[in-house]
View 1 (cartoon, rainbow, N blue to C red):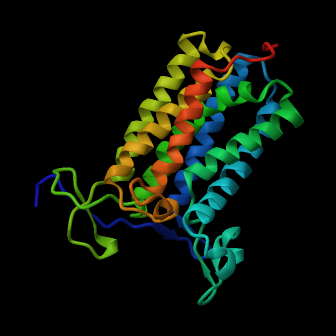
View 2 (tube, one colour; view 1 turned 180 degrees about the horizontal axis):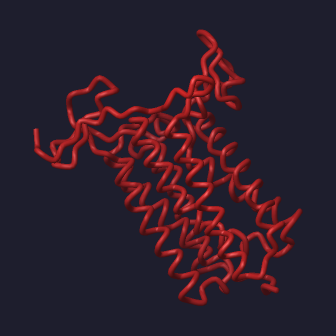
Length: 276
């Protein structure tokens, strides 16, 4: 075994007696809190009200969490619909005995789709600008949030990589393994830091925020390109890939449309209305 390889056997939660605090859930909380403060800076720069920011936070949390959960069920674990329906929406499992599980099984593709829908509703009910105006800005904190979500996956020893002899391999002891694997979650988290920094640079240091859809498109291209290539070192989570000959993973198949949509908004899309 290489000297740099890590035996990963962390404590996943803290038992507070009346409640078990999962570190994975804490990563989501950190992601939303940091996202709130970044968006607050952006809204202050744009002259938006605190009331609009508070509403955005509510729409974002509900939309992303619900979409991430439904995305996982639809794309990866559809049997829950018939076998344990209420576990889809509640942090409990009921099949085989009642158990608190926390919100496990969240898909980023579902979260992305739900984010677009929730921002459409938020813009229509609250902001009253354009959907792309808010999407161009909200993708900045979302990119940072993705970093902490993947760190949470690493803590949970989930979404693991393929076996490797690389010096960066990690032995996920809680899975009962002795062979090192790629820490695919950390690869993604590391890359997402740069996605966040690139988006931040284009927003604060250039005038690209004035080009409707550009930052949103850039986010889609960068994030899902990272996801596509990291999938090569991930263990397959199953899903729809079997219907396409197993040539690409489900994560890769779902990433391709997002990259194409991103390129469209960066280089082809022409807004019908100007920003007010």
